[in-house]
Amino acid sequence: MLRLLILSTLQSILLVSGQIFLKFALTKMLPFSWTWAFFRSALFNWQFSASGIAMGSASLLWFYILRHHNLSLAYPLLSISYIFGLLASILILHEPVPPVRWLGVLLIMSGVALLTR
Image (cartoon, rainbow, N blue to C red; front, top):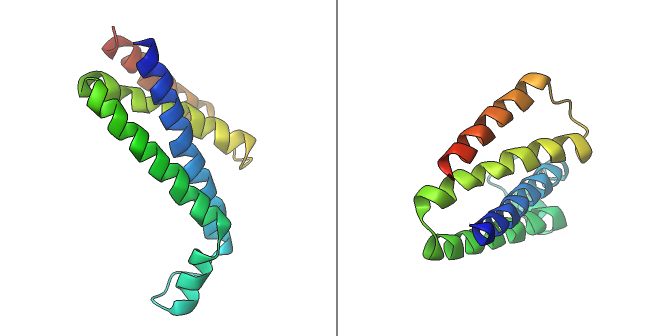
């Protein structure tokens, strides 16, 4: 169980990292259009590439988790990413996170704790 928790935490960190890189990448890219200029702005954006690498790594780690652990136990542990997402929103993006969102995450994590018993 400890091994699964560690792997799930690492996978959640990779997922959130990918989303943070994507958020930064989208602020530097041209508005979406079916043009070469848009796709060039995406291809030469290092944050966009880092987002893909982080999310791809998270997917590979998920493949490993699914192969070696029960889905009914592993899938709820993905909720750990909600905590890291809120923390990244505060620490990296400097977004306000109201108490009601923290309450929601607390309820989700309480449910996960019940499921993993």
